[in-house]
Every structure is written in C-alpha cells, then in structure tokens.
Amino acid sequence: MNLPYPLGTPEAESHAGNDLDDAGFDKMKELYKSQVVVPDQGLRPQFIICPIGLVGSGKTTVMKELSKHFGLVRISSDEIRLLLEKNGYNSIRTVELSFAITKEFALAGKSIGIDADCSGPNIQKAVTESSAELGMKVIWIHVAPPEEFMIMVNTERKLPRNWPFNEDALAAYYRRKPLHEYLTASFAFTFDTSKSDMPEQIKKAEMVIEELLSQ
Image (cartoon, rainbow, N blue to C red; front, top):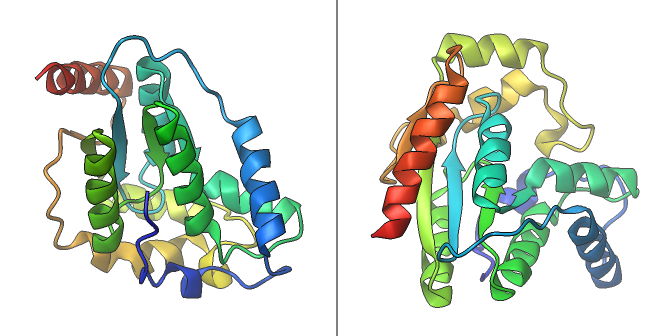
C-alpha cells in the first residue's frame, strides 16, 4: 500500500524517544511481523476490514473477534507504538510502519484486519486505492457506542507514554471527534459496544461480511 501522506499524523505523533532511522525501521517491522498471529484463512477471497471508531469505542475488542473468525492478520497501531516505546524510539513513523507491514502481508496473499481508527479521509483514500490495486475487497465497519459510554471509558483509560501529543485518553477522544462528524464510508455493520449483547453483534457482523464476500 502507498503511504497516504500528507496525513498530519507524523506531526501528531509523540517525539519522546529516539528517531527511528531506516535500519531501525526495518528492524521494528520485522520484529512486529514476528509477533503477529498469521492464521489459516481458508478459501475466502482476499480482503481487508477497516474500522472507524473514536478512542475508547472498542475497536480492538471487535477486531480481535473478527480477525479470529475470518483468519485475518490483525495489525494494531497501538501495538506498534508500544513496540517502538519499548525499544526506545518515538512514535513519529507509526503510520508508515503500519502501512509497510500491511503491504507485505497483503502482497503475501493475506487478508488484513486493521486495528486502528480509519476515519481520516487520506487513510480511507489510500486504503481504497491500494486495495483496488491488489484486488482486495474493503469492508468498512463502524464502532460507535454512545458518547457518554466513551467519555466514561476514556476518563479511566491509560494511554502509552508515546501516544500522540502525550495526551490523556479523554483529550485524544475530543481531538479526534471532529473527524467523525461527516463520515462518508458505507458501513457493512455498526457496533454498539456499550451493550451486553456483543457476542450476538459479532455473529451478525460475521454473517453480513460473509454475504458481502460471496458477492
């Protein structure tokens, strides 16, 4: 996949830690790839699931379940930030790393589950165009519990030290909220993670996605 600059994201990422040079970039890429679960994906066509959801909405909860069911390689921007922090690097190249890793797995014929907020228009454009080049279908899902639920979650949530802007979770929620006011993606399914019926929601989403993949 081609890196969708300008994203604004490199400027938003934390500068705490050492800069990641190209040698370090390759090392972190291979290290993250070695930690990723690569399941058997069966005979389904190659595709990618992209969630859109604010900080604290429950994207990881949803993507772990969908990735397990569909045999997706789940790529998490939060996990990449933590890996960079653990190795003494800042998080400026997080998005670049995420796209490089995604591209390598996609070129290897794997289907992908993105565990990150894909709400940015440049991200959506890059995913759509790159997936079309690779012949991959894109499935957009929305993780959208009520605002009061996300405020409660983010009030209690702790973020990694090298999170963008070194801000707390609630500040991150309000900073990214404007990106979600005018969404244009066509969602296959919308989750409300505040409800107690998440297993049922997951099953319904799996059925909807299976139907889309069969078309």
